[in-house]
Length: 421
Image 1 (cartoon, rainbow, N blue to C red):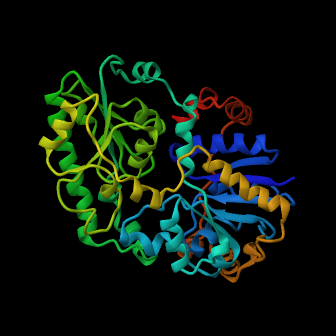
Image 2 (cartoon, one colour):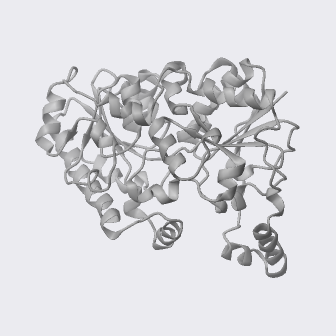
């Protein structure tokens, strides 16, 4: 029997999809393991195993996460959780190195990323077009908290319309050290690009103040991205003088999208999830950014450049007239049929039928780079290893096995409530 090992990074971004994936895999008769990417290797490798990685950029990922145990013999699958991207991030996001070309399978959400992978030297036989795993969440609304639950927990009025304004301006807070590391790994972070995030943050904050004042009978949820450098505390001052404005970072954004009468994004790919969920969604771009940096989210969505236009959309609720570019959407996201995770299970079935075909043949744990780094760590302590970026963080705690098993079996968020929060 083949084992599917799903490695996760950010609870809010991946856990609900992982719960559905585990349910699908177990119903199809496969063994399953869920662990944080920092904990890979804490358990013994089964004879036939498929390891799903949330991302694979370059060999630093291999050296950081894939060396705790001998992975030779496993199938390694790159879920590539960041596919829709700015042009300046392409050199970083597309998987580099011989290991990526020769030892991994790579998932593409649609034909656009498949083409980019092919152009980047990934062999066609190592690409699977699966669709976005998170889209399946919207076919399992039983995994989401209801309106009454959210309203009680966060002091929202369940009888009023909710407007969701996600904040995803992490790059405005990036440290010089991290910026230098990303640039070294081919992320072309120019001053203009980074400054654009700070300008957008300020413009959104000004807009949110106006909206909250203009529509006192609407609840506005300013949702800070839970997996970045931004902190909810940065914006809590905005909520003290406006009782209908709430800064919230908890729970998967799917919970908020499905209960919002409207979601207003800058340029987050979560906007694509709102489209899949059938919920009204627009983008606000007060100055040119998606065009100069080649970002398709704002081409797919109705995009407005003035606050007045956004105000008019809200006045038209609950039925604003909005038009989306579904053709461009489907270039990036081919599938939205609720079977994206079934396609991941198909990869496990491939391994079950022919385990030798794509098994990792390189002895990951004994590559010269890793051997040198570990020897230096023994001789000079962990600081030497850090020079080679081989320091691994302590493994993140996984959900309690009993709670996870129940959540997967029942497709219920209740057993994992504290963990998902």
